Image (cartoon, rainbow, N blue to C red; front, side, top):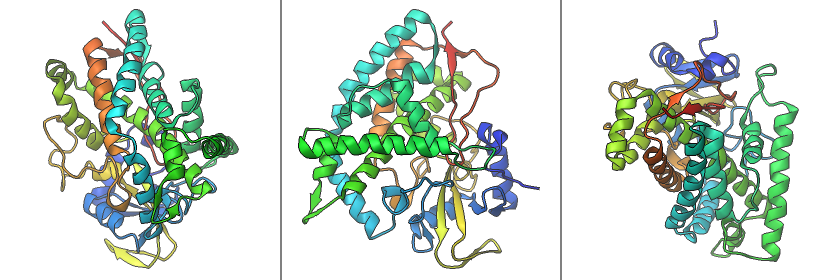
Length: 387
């Protein structure tokens, strides 16, 4: 029997009981559905993120990889190429003061909340979280104003999977190509007319005469868009859901808004949207009595490591006073999320504002629908209402 089917709707909805079985009984588990090994214990995952010579990202970090990404993005390269890409990307980020995210986040949040409070019934993702992530990211990157719902749909498709084929279907591939073509055109515009935005800074970033190639700029920009639009929106939505499910924690934050920061860290541990990322075995190794061969694929189950009692006592308890040091919500090792500081800031600002205006809310459905993805976990909709 398959103990962990990567393409199961039950896994999308609630992977945590299955993770517990893996951690306690099959810590190095061969998944027939994914044709890969799954590492589920915290220490094993962290060690694998550090040992890039054994567990390589160079053949892609998505379980169902998209064409053209492997070996050309921050998440799909190993040192020394990864170090080069990261240094140049950081050089571009350094030209944008993180405090520049505050004003647009407040502006977009306030306008979204005006509409929410007028209606009192709202869909959190469409009406709030993706409004902020698309709006803030596109302003930062200098991209033209677009329908945020359509942008989010085009970003979700490339990271989704089709359960009937256990992988990507042509629609997913086409959506990624459309996104890449759009960004290729935008990069060309910046090459011709430089402006003060992140895409220009990526195109101009230089260290000792080294610069990103055209393809690297496009794919790095695509990575930022996919992470900024979908991962950040999904995390914000998961935080809102956690606070719905734990009203005592929500009321504590309403009374003391500064508690939003530790709540963010606990939500990143308790319910991260980044559940699993792939590596490829570059040299045979043995773990928990299982022999992983050169060329085997491995899924690092960050969502499972975050619930490992060996690292986090009472891991299935949501405790905003926990302050979980070393959680895997932003990954670990060489591929720790470059945008983590921005993600924390935007989420804190937006959710403080949200809870000021909407201190009480409840779900209007009995069961949440979840996006289908072998890597990520996020609700497809969160229909809330105010009392």
